[in-house]
Length: 117
Image 1 (spheres, rainbow, N blue to C red):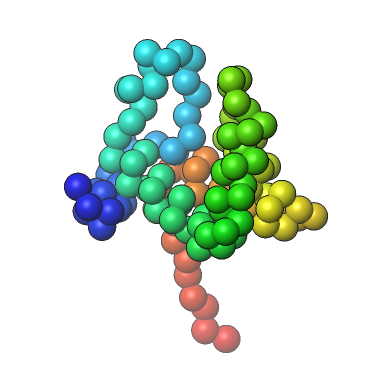
Image 2: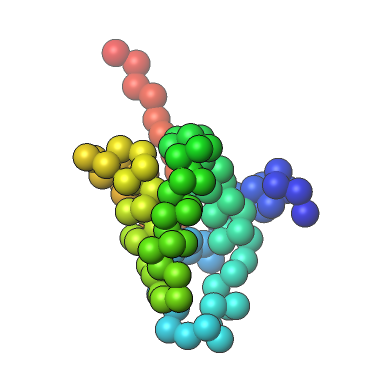
């Protein structure tokens, strides 16, 4: 499936009553397969693409190298991944934490409103 189709499916699924956040508690590797669906893949892929655009391609790959080096042969969390990306982006802020929370810890599509003044 192409990225555009996966993205559309993720957004469509995210509008359904059965929607869920991308980030989920996973007690075992056996349970992991049950957590992968259109929202996880579609919305998750959009988040990764936006993360790359936000931090820049070179910083993204530098953060990946740091992440894989630091967590080689051990478990890690989403927070660990975000922290590695933050170090190569804006080390003195927590902007990626909030950006990631809006995408990964909330269910439903992101929305905005415009007020005329």
